[in-house]
Each structure stands twice: as C-alpha cells, then as structure tokens.
Amino acid sequence: MKRKTGLAILTIVLLSVFLPFCKNLPFDNKESETPTLSGLADTNSSGLRKVTFLPYWVINAQFAGFYLGKELGIYKKYGIDLEIINFQPFYSSPDLLRTGEADFAALWLINAISVKASGIDIVNIAQFSSRSSLMLVTKKSSGINELEDMNNKRVGVWAGFDLQPMTLFKKFHLNVEIVPIGSTNNLFLNDGVEITAANWFDEYHSIINSGYNADELNTFFFADYGLNFLEDGIYCLDSTLKQDPKLCADFVKATAESWTFAFNNPDKAIDIVVAKAQEAKIPVNRIHQYWMLDRYRDLYFSSGKTTTELSEKDYMFAAKVMKESNLITEITPFKDFFKHYSKYSR
Figure 1 (cartoon, rainbow, N blue to C red):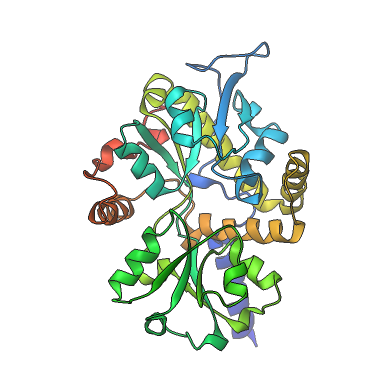
Figure 2: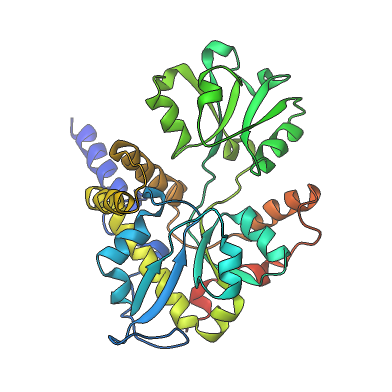
C-alpha cells in the first residue's frame, strides 16, 4: 500500500512539473520582464505605441490570445496599443506587411516561405505552433482504414492547400483523384468524396457535430507520416526588427502572456472571442470555440514545447518540399528567415 501511495505521489509531482499547459507556465520558460517604451512605432497620447496585427482568418478561438490580450490590457502592459485588423478576403498579409499597414502578422510556415521567396523581406521572430493540425479523414464504413486503402479514391482538398496532401500521396505512391472543395464538409458528408482534408481544431470537430461519432471515423495526421509542416508563427518585415527590436520583443512577450492566460482561463477567453465575433456579425458556436482553444493548446504545447523557437530542421524540410514542387526557386538561408526576437532585443 505504501508503495502504491508513493507511486501516486511521484506521479502527481511529475505531472505538476512537466504538464505542458499547467497553470502559469509561460512560453520560453521565463517570467516576463518589465516592459518599457521605446522605438519606431508611433505613440498615442497615452504614450503607448500604436501597433497593427493581421490574422489570416476571421475572428475565432484560433486567435483567442490576441483578442484576449487586447481586451484585458496585456498588450498595454507592454506599452502597445494594439489594433487587430479584421480579415478580409480582398487583401492579404503580404500586401499589408509590405506597405506597412500591418506591423505584424500570423502566417503558416509554408505561406511565409512563399512570401519571402516572392521578394517581400519578412522574418519569423517567434514560432508558436509546433505541430501541424492538418489531417485526412475517412469514414470507417468506406473501408479506408490504412493509407494504402486510399489508392484510386477521391480526396477533397481546399484549393491552394494541396501541397501537404500531394506530398503525402507522392511519398507513399498513392494514385488519388484530387477534388477541390470549399469551406464546408458537405461533399464528404454526402459521399461525394471518400476522403477529406481537415484541420484538427476546426473541420474535424464540425464533422463530429454533423452526426458522426469519433469511433466512426479514421484520422490520418500528416505529422505522423513525416509531414509536420508547422503553422502559426509571428512575422514582420526585417526592417521592423532592425529598427525597433524592442517593439518586436514586447509584441511577442505580450502575445505569449496572452495565450498563456487564455489557455489557463478558457471561459474568459471564449467570452471575449464570441463577443468580438458577434460584434463583427460572424456566426459563432461556443462549443466549437472551446474545442478550437483546447486543440490550439495541444498544438502550441506539443510534446511539452513551450519555446517560441523555430528549428532549422523543420524549416529546411518544408522549404525543400516547396522547391521540389516548383513553388519556390531558391531556399532562403535559415539565418535570414528566422530571427528570434530575444536575440535582437538585448
């Protein structure tokens, strides 16, 4: 009995130390420094620096940290008066970064590599995502239970987001028919395709909410098949980092603190996201937003990761795949692509 009790106590102690999303665990494993005002950004009458941030999609919990940080004054604590630019389909992150209308933007790694290759001199100053959320989903009733079962089947993939799926099919020598899909799961739900691409934090949960139980579906995470294309990173122009490294550091630190607070206080985070979405006339479902926030915690803190470093291995893998697919002609050296904020703010 004493041995079991001792084991239980040891387990609790280990969990309290290593659980990646435990209370008050900050990114980069250190307490935030006291912020001070400085630098390039314009200041308003209160002395705060005016900063603009552009998310790559509409208001939902995948950006909860930013909205919560703005609403609760965390960015102001770091001397930042943050404006979050509402996503609109007729302008893009590269355009707004290039013109200076957006100081910072969230981008997926492969999108950022493409932007850099196009001549817009952006840099990654903090990598939050550590695992790809992208998956393929099949119904068990279709008989597609293994990758090899996908041969000669139809796969629903979003237009312009076929790099990972095509790389997977090429790697495992699968002959499939790619069917472009929109923003719904209808084609998959109505058996128009046997396989569909989905993000773990979004479309997968929508499929479950459409009447399928998890045990009626098969999931194939790209990360589990050696295709871990990382997602959310914080990007700005290289000139912004050079001219105002303190601003970049304060923005990342405020963002990290905001996400940590959001993960530790999900009710508050979802209240803010839902209110902002409703204010912008965007349909929103609270249960789905909770699911999304939980999955983002898993994606950001994958395998206990709490740093905002981008590994050269992850970068080079994605860049090489893009070059082999003729999406870029040259690979930007890693040192010119990733410049962690902490190395420039000292």
